[in-house]
Amino acid sequence: MKIVEVEAIPFAIPYRKPLRFASGEVHVADHVLVRVRTDDGVVGVAEAPPRPYTYGETQASIVAVVDKLFAPELLGLSLLEREVVHARMNRTVGNPAAKAAVDMAIWDALGRTLGVSVSQLLGGFTDRMRVSHMVGFASDAEMVTETERVRDTYGISVFKVKVGRRPVELDVGACRALREALGPDVELYVDGNRGWTPSEAARALRAMADLDLTLSEELCPADDVLGRRWLTAQTSVPTVADESATTPGEVTRELLGGAATAISIKTARSGFTTSQRILHQCEGLGVEVVMGNQIDGQVGTACTVAFGAAHRSSSRRAGELSNFLDMSDDLLTEPLEISGGELVVRPGPGIGVEIDPDKLARYRQD
Ligand SMILES: [Mg+2]
Image (tube, rainbow, N blue to C red; front, side, top):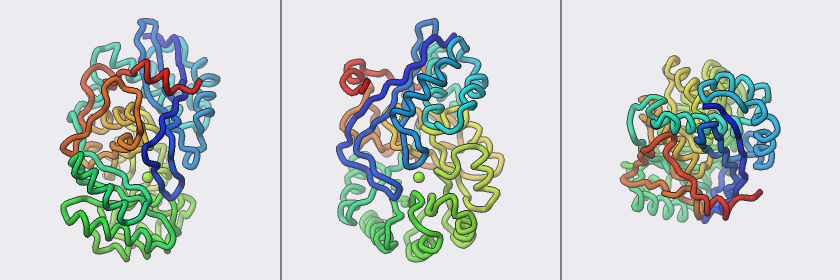
C-alpha cells in the first residue's frame, strides 16, 4: 500500500456546447488526470478541473504543484496515512483542485486495494442520487428548449439556473420563462456566481418571489460581507455558500456570520477527506448541503456521486451531476449514464471507473 508514483496528466476535451455563467465560460475541459500508483501495482485515479476565475488554478499550475511539490512529499507514504498526506500537502496554501484530486486518487487506490467501493468506505448510505442539471446563460427560448430536452431525455426534474447578469430583468425573465414552460413539478434554484450587488440580488429575489425557487447560491461576492448578511436576513429562499465556503474555516465564517444558510460541497475542490469534514460540520450545525459541480468530467462526476450517495444528508437533495453531458467525449471505458433522473454509483472497487488508454492517448496534452 506504499505510494510509489504520483502523476499529473493534462488533457483537453472540447465541449459540444460552451457553458456560460456570471464568472466565466467554459469551451474546453482542460483538466488534469491524477494517478497514484502503489508498490502493489494498484493505480488510483481522479480528475482536477482548473477554475482560474474561482480559485486561481490553471491546468499548468495543477501539473506543476503535483509534480514539483506534492509528489516528492508523498512517495513512500501508505494509502492509510491520509492525515500525513494532507499535513504535507497543506504546507502549500491554495491549490484546492490539485489537493482534492490527489486525495481522491488515494481513496480510489485504497478502495481498489481492499476490493471495495469508496462510496461504501465513506458511508454506504445509498447507491444513487437524483440529478440536478445546470442551465447556463442563453436566450430565454434556448434555455427553455435545453431544459425541456434534458428533462425529456434523462428524466431530470431539478434545474439550477445560472443568474447574475445585468440588468437583473434578464435573469428574472429567464427564470419566469422556465417556470412557465416546465410547470410546477420541476424544482428550480439559482446560482449567481457573485455577479450581482446585494441590492441587485434583493431586487431580483423580490421579482422572483412567486417562482418557488428552492435555493439561491452565491449571488454576491464573498467580500460583500455586510451586504451578504443583509441579503440573507431578508430572503426566505435559503442562501447557499459555494465558492465562498471551500474549507471548514470558510464554512464556519459564512454560516456563523449569517451570510449563508446552506453549503455546497464539491469533491473537485475538497476531495473526499475534507468534504467529509465539511459535511459533518454542517450536520453538527444543522445546515443543509448540496452536492455541487465544478464542471466536472465523468471521472469527477463519479467522485461526486460516490461521496453524495455515501451519506444521508448529502444524498437528500439532487446532486449537480450532469455537466459532463455537454462534453464531446470523455476518458472512461464505460460512460456514465443518467436515466430516470438518477445517477447510480459505479459498482466495482474504488470509485468504479476505468480509464480508456486510447482515449487518454488521444486527449493528453503532454
Ligand atoms: Mg455555484
